[in-house]
Image (cartoon, rainbow, N blue to C red; front, side, top):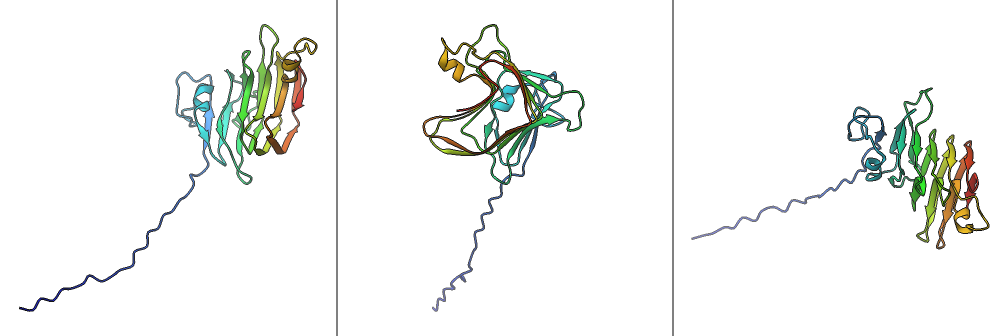
Length: 212
């Protein structure tokens, strides 16, 4: 018998892996909404906590509802990049009702970004009142990981009534870390390309704007 073994032809196979970044998204907070949504315009988050659990990506926008107050500290995660910063702002864009307000209610800060890059914070209001003075800020941008961080813009905001420490003689460390807006760098960290402009800052214990 004659057995002819057919060999399967060798066909080159190209394995193509396409890694495409997700398109930038718009996310919304309306702390007056009766139920918690999923962050869309039709179903906005109704607390800061929901946004604080989300990691934002380059080009994303997080917008708070105009003329609505949210209680607590807003500390969203993630970083943008040089071409697509993350925007933290208000909505609707053409509202004449006044900015959204983030009220820290005596927490360390009303807005906190830590070791993050390329955020633009605009058209918002921050306050942080308390029954007694202490180490407090309205906006705190902090780096403590020993690295360089880039691209923070804080513009056209109102920061007011922050119960920061005013007694420098007896509470010097708390006084040094109290302000309406503070940018701090520890452990060899640095900030590059930071803009703080066209903000209104008033009635803030410890000082208006500090860069440390």
